[in-house]
Length: 464
Image (cartoon, rainbow, N blue to C red; front, side, top):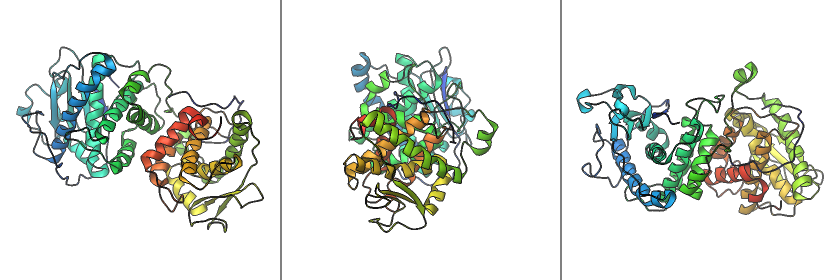
């Protein structure tokens, strides 16, 4: 993110935002597996066989997820695609690449792959004329590392994503790798919502799992600066989380219909040496200058072009302690009776520097939330209740979309900026020391941001 000057267009909601012969979803995870407890209920091995599976909890979790995935898609596929779901013919394969017994895999794993080549990976094989086609293979040690860091829902998510590729193999793949991978995320989200509603016989997901799941997606994104057209592109953090939530909120029909050529992806490629060197981040001081310039620019235009009102810039202040007008000792504040008549938006300087560790746009995202409360105040809307906070997060998504679309004169987007918004909301959005009286999960906060980013003011509880 940096200062820039550009010709402007009208503000609007942003339009709605792989698989090869082998759908290889490669990840690298750093961490030490911890011991995992067995799920309370487990599928009998005779009911669903996984070649090479051991007697540990990761294979039990995977088997549970796969059993419920078979049930879900058997029930859902006819409604969404108009025909019965053909079961996978190639089966399932579990591998610990560091301890392989070749005799357990006489024909290799999916696509005849040597099981020792599966390290830090899981994939669906759709190739024809090779051993073990139409199958899912996974590194159970890798899934153990995911579970040790982000809970038992992450191995289930990997199964759901790969099963999404099996669905695509039956109905056709999108035209690009990034669309293929994010559609599989969407299909995984649809299944996860079904489980969260209590429909799964073996798998389970609760509210805390959803926040952990979104945090886990950070490990599964492409490196910042990867182009969206890369052959194995999987998507940015926001692209993948957004796709998952789309399926979770709107079901498999949305996944079927929403991943055509017109879908927009936030993943972008670094184009300058400076971006490579900085990771796309402006220095902290410049970040403060950008938010001080871009937030009033956005809201002045939003009021004039969309909301039919006149915006008065509130006072913006960075301080070492909350202002006297603040009702609570929190890092991000809006005071209607502060400033010089238009309200006061204040942020704690030390907190801002801590948030900057996530990236420059994390800081901007945080300050944009109380700034949106100032805008609501000028529209004679509430600023101190749950509805106000939900609206402010959504409006922050709208602002971020305009930054992403290069619609503001004062700021230029960099690859990874929108990912930093997701990180901020998951890390700090429901911290009572950051925003007062937050009673929303990280999952809900990201979903609100996504709604504003994709559809603009229409979803944010303001006119326009």
